Length: 548
Image 1 (cartoon, rainbow, N blue to C red):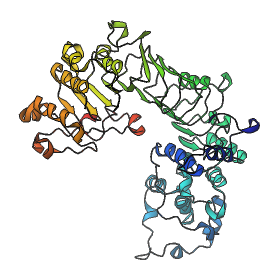
Image 2: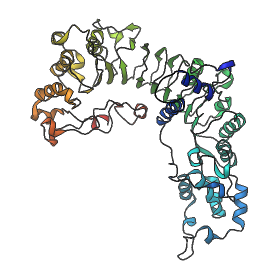
Image 3: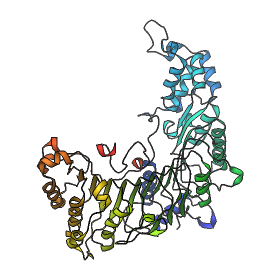
Image 4: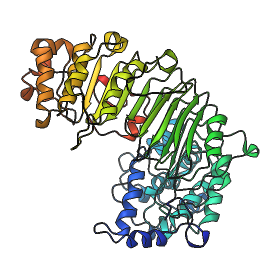
């Protein structure tokens, strides 16, 4: 079954059909339910944290008959309410000091409460009803419980929250709801969000059908600054929908079916768009063709794109790749400010620069270089001859490279024929002579050609300041080489590290005192949140001086 296709009869791919497909695999291990839950939980785990965490223990709202998401019922309950009954803890001098605070401060307090608790402030007094009305609404379905307040289905509860609130809407986060057979509530929700100026929207359909259409009302939400969509079929964009999202800065399309033309329209007609993420997308879009005057970060995360083309992106600074086992070309045509590229998989990616296909050992001309690139991350099988030989060629393509991350993939078979002699015969280049300061090795260097690469970097890296290697026992030869090359005294000034893979340096095992160790984090885990975080100078390093 095509995950992005139609089910039997051409309708939406239903949960039951997916379950039947998983069960038909006849494999031992996880059940269909477990597989589906894992896929969706993986997608959800990539989302930024909620603005307000969900309450640790949700109360039983079904017994609270006086509570309503509409303001009229709240006003009625306030008419005959005893203030001390509502505030048993407010004894003291009997004065309501909190209500005497400025409106702006009270609104700030309310905005930090979970959805239900924020709504309940209207029963405190007339003053608090005014504060609630003026506070930009924050709705999170995680705050509403499994079945919503007073037994209201969550889909309707979210829609009612938005419709009933008299003020603007700041943020809506929905990740626990299936909208199947709830098309009317979905239509109304998006229409209300558009009318009330929603700024931040995370809207996921949990978990099936995979191709449930997202209403075109989403294109009316012109006030959006961040938009994350999950498990939808995105509408086709035509001239009638323009202009689009004039304030949008960050968009993430998670496991969505998106026509190529719609992606192109988003890039071309969102004048402030800075971050675009295509995540777990299978088949549609088929390619990412970047033409944007504003985009700064483009992310292809575990999708099945046929190619990625950076055609005309004068502001693009980062091209982040986390690729499935699918070969594709990566074409860089117009990106004069590109500073970060990776992980470039030397087995799966065919790199093209300025129309030139980059091949191992080629004579690199100026038109096939990216002088702006400062940080490169590559995935390489050193035991595969052509992949290993690509590394010195890439140094010539990126002459001003300052930081190199190498994810060494282990391999049992060896087809390399160059070993140490290849690396010993190589001359230096501008990158190694004048710019490369940091090399981080993720994984272990075991074979002679892998050690030869490290020797080459240390020998020719004239301005090298930091070399990070994993302190695994399997990496002992590489560790000894680094320490022997720099020595204990040089380690203090050069910043050589054999730090733990979780970020802690093991000074005792390296023989270098803790004051001499450069605490560089060698972390093979690459997190989506780091890829899109522009505050990190180096998204491949976390919580260390290299990332600042």
